[in-house]
Image (cartoon, rainbow, N blue to C red; front, side, top):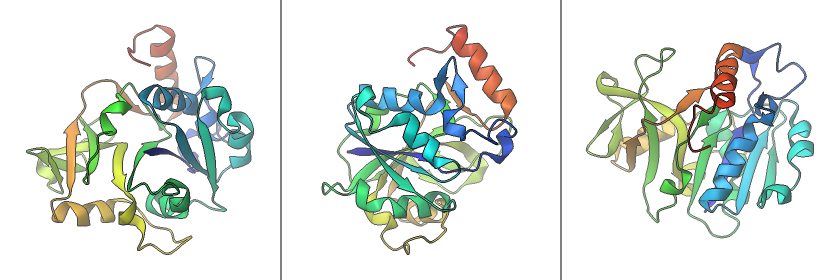
Length: 228
């Protein structure tokens, strides 16, 4: 199974930090945010990673290279402008399925977590979402979780962590270079009972503001996050 790291956002909420640096290359304890994902994916057994990019994307390619220094093969999917999550995945689909894979592991580049990625490598035909308790900035959550399956019931909602195992087939109906969000596709699958899920209560944070980045730096430098 390959993994994809979403790194095509404009980083608007992180300005002025992202005016000259793409968000995935912002530093936590002298390492780029995206490196934490790459290194932990490699430890989980991932051999190939696809990274999409748009804003200042050439910097990401120059910084990470072909992945050999991390012990993995990295491939890039460049977007002239961000295509949103599903659109970006569709553009990268040929890379994700080049070996006949039916699923891939997806990680948002702007989250920080100690979730064990190896838990998503199980052989299954179902898409699988990792949910987390609602943070202050998303108090109502995104999806519900009942009996191991994710639904659209926001009355018992949790927040989608940006970590998942998804089906290649789910994205084949999207036109190439079409802007398309992920949530509608997930809800279609949920309605058919095809999306399993779990609640992760370890460390997870959405690095959406400079203040949150500062907090992550403080925790990492203080060795307060296990399993990184």
